[in-house]
Every structure is written in C-alpha cells, then in structure tokens.
Amino acid sequence: MHMNGKTVRFQPALITATREQLRLYQEFRENELDLNMARKVQQQLLQREGREVLGVDVATVCVPARELGGDFYDLLPYGSGRVALALGDVSGKGTAAALIAALAMGILRANTVDHGASAPDVLATMNDRIHGARLDARFVVMLFGVLDTRTHQLTLANAGNPYPFLLRDGGIEQIAISGIPLGLMRGTRYDAVSLDLQLGDILVFASDGILECQNTEQEAFGARRLGAVLSSLPQDTPAEDISSAILGATDEFIRHTSSPDDDRSLLVLKVTDESREDFSGLPAIY
View 1 (tube, rainbow, N blue to C red):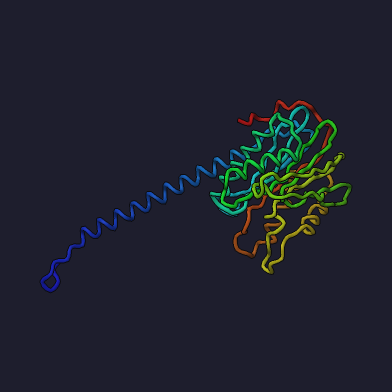
View 2: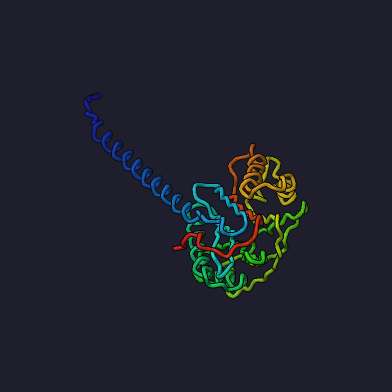
C-alpha cells in the first residue's frame, strides 16, 4: 500500500501478531490442561470408599474457593479395629496450597496406616516433617481422630483446627482440644482427649472456611449458626444429609457476597450400628 510516496507493509506485522496470539492461546490451553489434571489428581486423593465397614456413617465434602483447594480430609485404617479420621487446611490458596495438602496427606498416610502410634504422636511427627520441608512460612492446621470401632471410643488431637462439634440427645457441645498448627515450630507436642461415643451421636469436623465465611454485613457464620443447623435436623438424618444441610446453610449465608475467601470442608461422623472388625473393605492407600 502506498501513502504519500511511502510503502507500508502490513503483512509481516499481521503475521507476527497472529503468531503471538497463537502462542498465547497455546500457553493458555496448556495451563488449562495442567489445572484440569491437577484438579483430577486432587479429587482422586480425596476420594475414599468402603466406609460402610466402619459401623458408623461418615460423609465428607470439600468445596474449594478456587479451582484448587488447600483443604483435605482422609479416612485410614489404623491398626486392628481402629480407623483414623483427619480434616486439614493449608494456609494460603490455590496451586501451592493444594501441593502442600497433597504432601501433608502423604506424610499422614505414611505415618498412620497400620502403624498405630498415638494421635498426639502422629501430629508431632507430621509437624516435624512439614517443618523440615521449609515451606516458606506455610503451615497446616489439622484435626485428627482415632476411632476404636469395637468400643466406640474416639481419641482426638488437634493442631489449630476449629473445635469439633458433638451432637448428643439434642444437645450440642464443642470439644475443647487445641494445639499449634503443623510446621511452625520443630518439636511441638500435642494433647489428646477421649470420648466414649454412643449410638446416635454425631460428630462434626469443620474447617474455618465453614465457620468464618461472611455475609454482606461481614458477620461470620460461626458456631451458633452451625449448631442451629444441627439442632434443626431430624434424629435419623444420615451423615451425607447433615453435611449437605451445613453446606447449604453456608451457601445461603454468603449468597449475596462475592466468591468465598476460603475453602469449605466438613467431615461428619454418625454412630449408627454395632461395630465391626472387618476392614477389608477399605481401599488400598498406595
């Protein structure tokens, strides 16, 4: 094209722009595929089957605030006639938090399955391993329980997670058990508390994303509202429906706000029948 005696060449510039757009698109697609793969891997890590062998009804849910979350849960064989339950939350968000959550789950499984150490010792070992990984000031909060399915005795140890809720005969209490988050200080030791669960008891592990999600007035959902949800449910409500009711209540609570700031996770356990010692239905960990 000629303008005032000068030749202007559009084709090379157009080709360069097209190549750049193609490069950006390919990069976007690769990132999207990587993210989808990471999401699938995380879902596989969180997927646990065979819960019917426990003599209790267990439900779990994890709703990440972003594509990938830093919350995690697990259900593990813990020696003869016992099962371990865990709910954890990595500080921060996104891909880095999800990777650290996978690391924490790996350490948990390596130090839990068929080892049978005490609940406080499991947290102490995890703390030292995570601290030794030098994760740039990241830390992990985790509530850990060991259930003896023959006696229905539950032993709890906590590393900074919100207190668990116990619903029994229409009354609700929070079990006061606290501890320092994992990874902050080497050599941290943890306390334990034991509960003798009864038929019909409901125990709820909730992440801080459940209790601290806020409405448009910046009010937190809090323990009182969670307790009200539990109190409103019929006594025969299964664990899955209890979990759905709590999650639904938080969905409604934050309905007119922007996206949640934190992952929301629950582990709900309900004592339903006689204990059994056959753990062959639990999936392989590896």
